[in-house]
Length: 265
Image 1 (cartoon, one colour):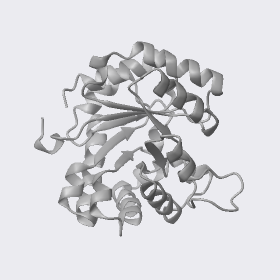
Image 2 (cartoon, helix red, strand yellow):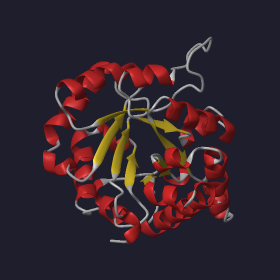
Image 3 (cartoon, one colour):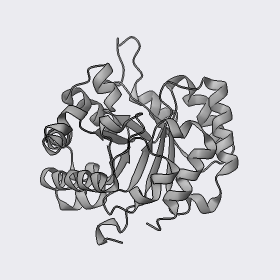
Image 4 (cartoon, rainbow, N blue to C red):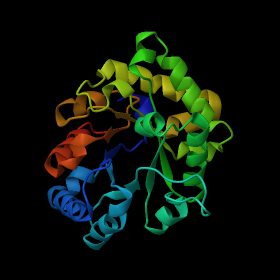
């Protein structure tokens, strides 16, 4: 194990995206709770991120049945309250015991035109309400093909973290999710993932200091499956996984969690 991994407890997160109504979400949460054993989560944190309409239902299941899974959200508003029709306040999420909030997911950037400035504002909204942002960064296939991966990651990280207190950065999660690997079945190789995550950690060090860079967790996301989990988690700068479609199946997601726990991090 690399010394850089010491003290960073892995986080495996399931992003349900726009899937599962509240009844299906209840069944999925209960199914996950029945499958996960204490040994599966002894060395790994787990979160699920259902659609907004499912959050209260999933919260009731997780808390009521003592399931060792943290509740997450997929997005939030920039403001805490006001005339923002259709938005969901981070205050409301915190009241529902949401612990982690995805910020800047590539689908939000692409389909809803969220800029680096918007993402930075959402990150601060999550932090000021006592939740942990899972700050997503990653390059498109075009950027990768012309060698702009590092430049894009540097710009995204710098825009979001500049001015954020060091102790807040240290508590965060950054998710490296190459856009070309999301939902395509084409996962990054462990070498790709390690190179990008190490670069991200270096940028964090330059923006927020070595202590924050050493402490914060960096996930990999993009076509994660049980059969590539261990190789990805063996990378010294990969501290967890952001799982998309595979997290909708409780059995498959449990296998990913178990594979992550076998890395002994």
